[in-house]
Length: 365
Ligand code: PHB
Image (tube, rainbow, N blue to C red; front, side):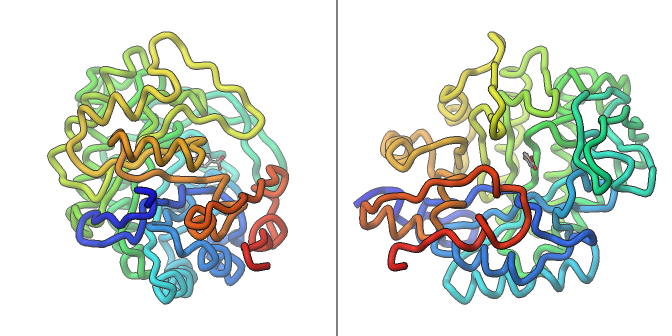
C-alpha cells in the first residue's frame, strides 16, 4: 500500500491519510469576506483527504489584499465558516484554517484608503486586483511597536475565532511575501529596532505570532507555512538559507502540529528564476528536514508518484496538493484505484462562480 494512504497523528488529531489539500485562493467569498454554500460544496467534495488547509483567510480588515477572499474577524464570517467545517467533519475529514495578513501586498482601496502596512516603508512593486480594477502597489506604512503588538493580537484572536468556527486548528501563513515573510526577509525589512536588522530580530515578529497563536488555541492545533526560497511578491533576502535555518530551529521549541515547507513557488503563467543564494527547487524540503524535529509537510507541484517517493524516503511526512485537488475532488480514491487524473483549467482558478470550482467530475460520474 502507498504510504500516502496511511494515517498520521499531528498534534492530537489523527489524519486518515497523508494526502493534504494545500491552501488555495479561489476568490469565491463575497466582499465582506463571508464564506457561502458554494464554498461548502467545494470543501465537502474534497473532505476525503487527510487534512484540508483552507484558502488563505484574512485575520483583519488591514490584512485583506485580494478581492473576494474570506475573513475570520467578524461574527458573520465565523457563522459562514461553520457549515463548511460541519460538512467536512460529517464526512470524517479534518480542516485547518490558514491565517493571512497580506501586509504590503495589499492596496489602500481594501481599507478605506488607509495605507497598507509592512515591516518597513518599501514598495514591493507589482500590481493588485482591486474591486475597481488593477492598480499599482503603493508604498506601505511602517508598523510602529504598538501596531505590531496589536497585529500579533489579531492573529491570536483570529485563531480563537477559527476554533469557534469549528476548525481543527490553524496554519499561520508565513510564506509567499505576505506580512510575516516581509518581516523575515532583509529586502523588505530595514527596521533598526528589535524587529529588524539581525536575523534574530527579523524573525521576532513571526515567532511572536506563533507564540501568541499557540497560547490562544494550543501548540498542538498550530502550524505554520514558510517559503524559504520564495521570491514571489518581490521578496529577496541576503542570506535566505541562514535566515530560514534560524527561524526553523526556533520553531523546534513549539512542538507545533506541523511545519509546512514550500519548494519555490511559481504562480500560474509566471516563470520562477531562483538566484544562486537560494536553495533550488526540490532542495528545500530535504534541507529543512535535517533541521526541523516535528511533522513536516511539503508542497509545490508534486505528482502523486513524486509525493510517494518523498514519503518512502522519509524526506517529508505529508504532501500537500493544490492543482491536483482543484481538478480531482476524489484524488484519494483515484490514488487508491490508480485511476486517471483530471487536468485543471487555470482560467477558472480565480474567476468566481461554480464553473471550474465544484464541477470537476468524480470517478463514478
Ligand atoms: C494569490 O491569491 O495569488 C496567493 C494567495 C496566497 C499565496 C500565494 C498566492 O500564498
